[in-house]
Each structure stands twice: as structure tokens, then as C-alpha cells.
Length: 95
Image 1 (cartoon, rainbow, N blue to C red):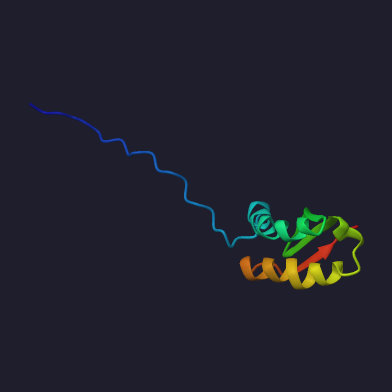
Image 2 (cartoon, rainbow, N blue to C red):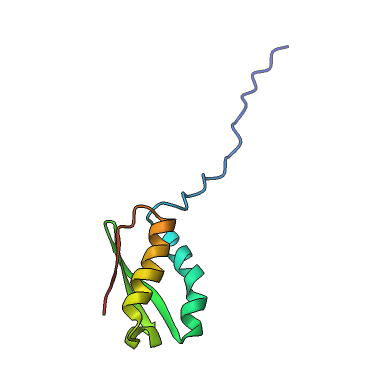
């Protein structure tokens, strides 16, 4: 008795995305880690555009008009994004 059974491959789950790749999802994930600190001071941040290795963001609320917004952007947001996603070379504020 001959059985001609073919074994279908079990469906595999898609490979998890690289958390260090420069994608909108990964940038949002990193920004989500920073948002509680920004919100504590009455602000927030949103992604406007990713232009090659440059992430363009808009600071919102109190962060948009704060005299320390450049420091927040460069020493906080840019540093965290560059540490988490090496492909990021710069973070620029869009008004």
C-alpha cells in the first residue's frame, strides 16, 4: 500500500522587524519612551517626516515655545533616537 502524502509546511510567523531599523514604527517606539517626560512639562512630539537618515519632528504644546526646546531636541530626542536607531544622523525641528 503506497501513500502519496505530501507534507505541507506549517505557516510561519513573519520575522519580527528589526527594532534598530529606521522605520516610522521604530521611531514612534523610541518617542513613546520619551513622551512621558515631555508630557510632564506640558509638551509632546510628533513625526513629520523621515527624509533619508534625517528625522523631522514637530514639538507640540509647551515644548514648541520653550526656550529649552533646542536642548530637548538635540540632547534628548536626537540622542535617544541615534542610540536606538544607528541609521539616524540628525533630528530636525519643523515649525
